[in-house]
Length: 223
Image (cartoon, rainbow, N blue to C red; front, top):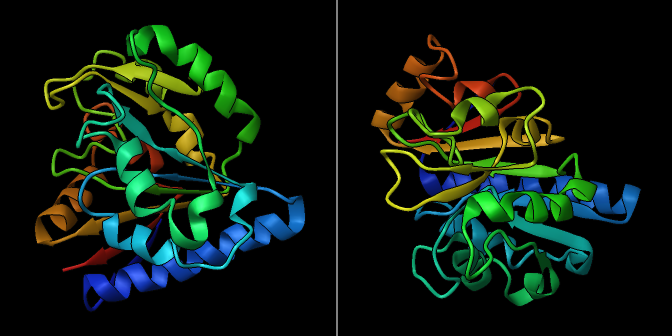
């Protein structure tokens, strides 16, 4: 794990946006295509705003959520909705959003079909993760009903997850996919999350799921 500390969130997001742009640009020059998996919630909005203005061949970039709440695409809590409104605009409007929700079904039923569409993108070029104070990341929650499957070395691409800390059912990229990315970034803000991260390093992944990805991650922290 590499740990980077910044004077404030603005500096963090500016530095990280520049790094991600470089990673995607390198993949585009080398392979002609790239992929970017990003979290939902309130934290990454400023990062999305910065990336949406970056001059890249976005038409060749596949963008996907690291996880998705099982809610309609129009719901304010939909990660896909956040990505469309804050990232896939401006210069990045041509990027391709990979769906992680299917109306009229449940995450358990949809996981294999949606995962099969993501599989050709692996390993993902860049993954950005957040972390909760309960030490979950993506939708890998302590106490999740399919956490053991999601942490397994042979886990499928996507795993359905229902957990006490999650109001809705979820669909999440497995730990195998997350930590297998060519570039993995974990963004945390505030002293409480830094304390949680330090605590997680002494625990096993079933108790602190973020532990499953830390060895491969660059951690970006600001007060």
